Amino acid sequence: MDKRYFLQISAALVGTAFFLRYINRSSETMATSKTEFEITKPEEEWNKTLTPEQFYVLRKHGTERAHTSPLDKQYTQGTYLCAGCELPLFTSETKFNSGTGWPSFFNPIEGAIATTVDRTLFMTRTEVHCSRCGGHLGHVFNDGPAPTGKRYCMNGVALKFIPA
Image (cartoon, rainbow, N blue to C red):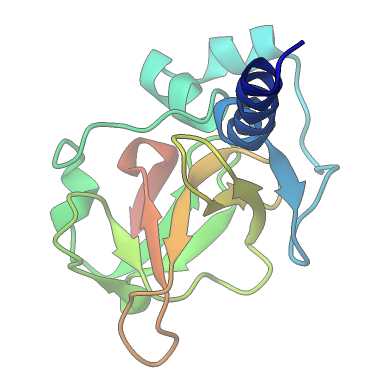
């Protein structure tokens, strides 16, 4: 084996090992994360109780298209619940217009969410889940308004709005 061939193979192996963590879905738990949830159902049961769009987002970690949710421009007083289990997640007092096309909040209701590390699409993000059923809600970023500096960018299809 010549030196050039050895270096090429070594570079390919190192590159593959590096990118596998981004290609394969990885859910490393964080401090606020949970691995067991109060509400668990078989996939077939979730499929019966959720719309196809809700199932795709909540159970398959999908993302709805930006600017498609009517909840993005909803500013009536009320509470946003998990569409999977109806756990209250956010209040209208913490909602703001982020301009991203998804409903955004700067603070969840205490104890309502859990998070994991999402290493898909060649980036590392903090994924947000319902703390009761584990449904995928969206992601949280550090570019939100005061007082928290957080932007909880949620899929509208994963939420249910109840006016006050």
